[in-house]
Image (cartoon, rainbow, N blue to C red):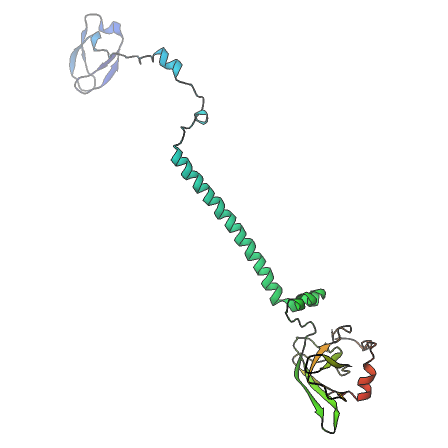
Length: 265
């Protein structure tokens, strides 16, 4: 049994035989208090009450918390959760579409801004850009100061002059030029091919050209200059002892240009 000092609450373990059925006086070793101890001083040990058998049978047994069924949610709460889930799905889909649109817009913008580089790397793309109304300069030369006027001493001839400016950072050999004379309605009156046989045009530099074209009926009201791209422009060779000339295009207008005395400035 366990004896507890009523003065200092110190507990001692003693056998029932040492106390005896009639009890005996004992003294606390800690504080010196003495009292008469009996077997009735032993604490009463209580056993937990057993649960009714009926309740034990009715209550289901679960080995883990994962097996415990969740209580059914109220209908309004389920509807609210479903709405939130749909909103999240719609937001995710919208973000995906926005990202895809941004990628497409970036590709289109890059295709427009870098169309000249794309056309030089993939020449058929130049036709696509032209069909969309976008100018593409794959030659690297710009026509400046283009002018057409009747020659002073021969009204039946038109003098066309202008200049080519190199807009690249490398030397460019100019391709043949196609000079087209047009009437007041924009129809072609005549065309001539002009070849510039001078040196390559340096970066940022300008090379002039001029050609006299017959106009016996005086119908010329406008003109245009384009490049004959069958002889594609090429950068000047940096280290070569030989210079190769581009093959001449076989057109019926070349002889007319030479007979008219094409000028080059």
